[in-house]
Every structure is written in structure tokens, then in C-alpha cells.
Image (cartoon, rainbow, N blue to C red):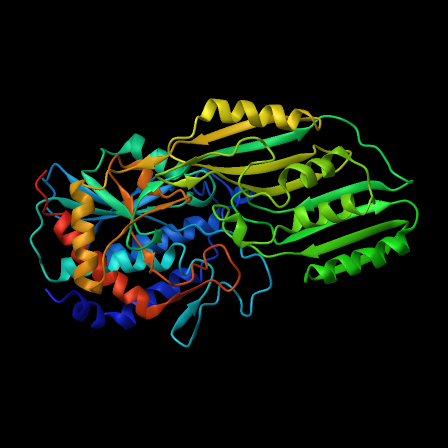
Length: 468
């Protein structure tokens, strides 16, 4: 079967369906949550749209409590199935985009929109791979399910619901990372730090509020602080100079004796915090190093989080040979005297990380500044041995379609693959290409997406005919 040729015949249809899906601003919104729309109306709209397309194309479909759905192909009496694990939710479209992030825009072969590469583009590539197999009436030993999750970016409750409701698949993959094959994923410790003490003023300058970040798994690209007290004009000058030295955009506004400082950084995925510029930490550094405000909340940020992506200052640094170093992303900062003062940490843990000891060390480090670890959520790491049969099938498919070696990779990201005992992450970002997930002006290169669809078709067909 010439998989590339089959994809070429469906390019326009794939682009049309992808454009429809990208127009839906499927950001989780619990304020809009109901029993029928658990992740909010827009996320439910994306799920309904994808299932409607699958029904249009003749797949068997199922919607599980409006949290997750799937389209299925293959003999209904087959006891085993292959799972293709995709997600339809997206992170907020923060930052200043060149175009509306939910009005897909094609330029120079790149399709720009939130979700283009994470994960709606790869989802449509996998869907069309399955559509090619169906329309060519190819024989399948096992069923194949392409699963559409709705809460991948902030908890994965959709997949927890799926595994409670449905039998475990034989094997499968998540088209939600990078090619060739990611066979190991770091685990996570997501910690909410609550500050328990009262602040102090320095030279009459008081911290009124501090805010930065919306998602724990994103590097915040915007921060604001309000201060009141003396020498505000001097502080404005120092702040402008600081921002200029750091090559960052800044602004100041004043009203009623309160000065607001805002700073813009650079967003990045929380698994690679070193690729971004954390606006919250930069702003805290300014306030502390220039002796503007003496406050343990800010001092902790400057002492223990700024300029350290690997947890050394928190005394939780760790490294293993499988997945490399532990990383720390400080994703959310919220301080106001009349409300809770919190910091959210997203810690990506290597496969061999001692979780309990890491949490103990974290608690010890934050207590020195008046914080307590109020909430901990853990995700264990995931690892598939390099000689597993699924690895061999996916390597062969990748090499046949690209003529390049299918090297095994690891990641700090968390994908749905961890919900399958021997599942892996498989594309759709190719080696040497930029991964714009979670960034402003996110895009997918359409030629890459078409190649990914051919790889997926090859892989799905052979996985669906594995000996069980």
C-alpha cells in the first residue's frame, strides 16, 4: 500500500476537517461546566464535532459521559483493540498573536491556530490514517479505536474515566509529542504552595498584589505587581531600566498612591521551562534585588526558583540515565493580602525519582520562607522497554515512510500513552522542527502533517494485525 499516495488524495479534506476543529476554542472552562458539559461548552462542542465527523464517515462511535469519546473500526467480535489516544482540549491562547488564534490561518505551508500541533493537527492525521484503512477495506485482526479526550491539558480526568469504563487495549500510541518514538515519559509532582505568614514592608514600600500565570504546565509570559509607599517615581525609573537590560517589555501605571508594574516574558511548555522567560520570576527578582519590597513571598521566588530550572535551590535535583534531569516550572503566582497567597509548581520527575523523599525535601525548603505544601498531585513515570513488539512496529513504519532511522526518545511531557501499559508517544513533530505547542502563533507544517498521516496509517494497519 502506498500510504503517501492515499494521503495525497485526501489532503484537501483533511485540511477542511482540521480547520473546522481548530475554529472551536476548546479551552477547559469549569465556570461553564454542567453535567452535560463537564469541561465547558466549547470543549463539548469539539467532542461533538469530532464524533459527528466519525459518524459521517461510517465509524462506530461512543460518547462516555461527555468526557471522552471514540471512533472504532474493525471486526466487532474481535476481543482485542488498538488505541490511538488523542485530545481535543487546548491551553489558553496567551500572548500577542499575529492572528486570531481560533481563526486558522495558512501561510507558507504553515497552519496557524491554537491546537494546530497540540493536538488537533495530529488527531486529524491519525483520524485520516484510520479513514484510509477503512476506505480501502483492509483486513484487520483487531479493532482500532481513535480516542478523543477532553482534559489532557489539566488533569486527564477524561482518560481516568475511559480506563474505568472500557477494557484495556492490546497496545497503542498517542500522536501528541515528537517523532520518531518516545518510549519513556517523566512523572510529575504538581505542588500548590500556600504562604502562611504576614509580610513586612521595607522603606515604607508594601506589596499590594502579585499575579502571574494561568496554567501550572506553562511558563507564564505576563506578570503584574502592585506596590504602595514612597519613592514610586524612582521605582518606575529603575523598573524601566531593569526591563531594558533584560530585553523585556514593561509598563507602569499609577493611581491612588498605588504603582502597578507589568512585565512580559516568553511562554513555553512546562516540561521545558528553560525555553521560556518566566515573567513572574523576573518581576520578583527586580523587586527583591533592587530592595523595593522585603517580603518572604517574593524572597522565596528570587532565592529558590529564579534562574534554576532543575531544583538545585530547592534541594530536589535528580537525574537518571533513562530520562535525564528533574525540572521545575513555577507556573502560577497569586498574592493578595485578603486572599490566599499561593505558588503552583510543576515538577517533572525522571523515571527513577524517589517521590516520597523529593516531596519531603520540597516541604523542608519551602517552610523556611513560611510556605506549606498544601496540595500534591502525582503522576508516575512511564517506560516501555526498547525491544517491545510495539516499538518494533512503530520503528518500521517510521523508517519505511521517512527513510530515516527511528531512534528512541524520552520526554518530560505527559501524554495519554501512560494510560496503556505498553503505549508510547509517536509524533507528530519531526526531528529538527520547532515544537510550538503552548506558545503564541502555534502552527503545524501541513506537509509534515500529511507525512505523519502516512506513518500513522502504516503503523495502525500493522499494529491491528499483530499476534495478540
